Image 1 (spheres, helix red, strand yellow):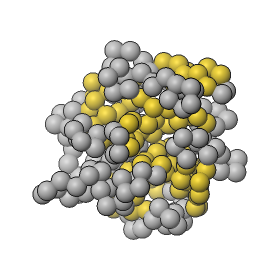
Image 2 (cartoon, rainbow, N blue to C red):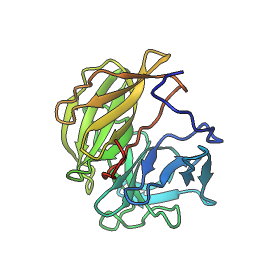
Image 3 (cartoon, rainbow, N blue to C red):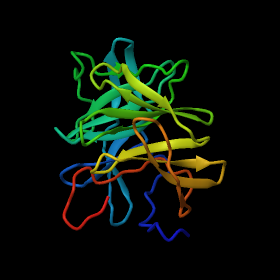
Image 4 (cartoon, one colour):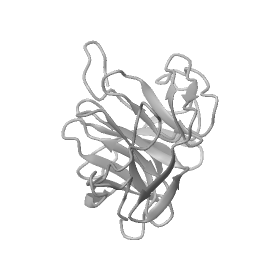
Length: 231
């Protein structure tokens, strides 16, 4: 068991992909089984909403929200964003914390925007908003190639991207309060790591091994600074 990890408890589900820490309340949110919920950071238990996120409508017609891969808060306005896995370009939506449903009409009357591909690649594994300038970043993966992508959060268009230097399967992204980007994923089939990432170059720094669990799908940090707490 890695000494840099503390196991809290079992979530009660094996299907949590995206997680996001509220920038003010520090409540940890996640999505499992198509439902937005809260993860108890004392027990690890996931408590999902009664209703599923459901269906969204937009420029590509109606789409069911079944597989949320990424979650992130915008620290400026506490809005929760989610990336949704779909064939032929993933979706970006906003979620209402009160209802667990999409924010309907959030994108100029549409419920979603499509996230542009990087070449032929459209597998968005996670998203993260930089607390320094509120820029939206994502990791787009194909096999063992990873791209760090900056998206326009209003249109889903690509602002810039860089190919990562690491031959790894990256699953999660998260920013700390200083604007440092972190990623979590695996090298090979058994070795899991946490890496610092240069958001401008896509360079993955030396990784810290993780082995309290397997198939780490998300990483989250405090997005604002609190006295006595480290990122």
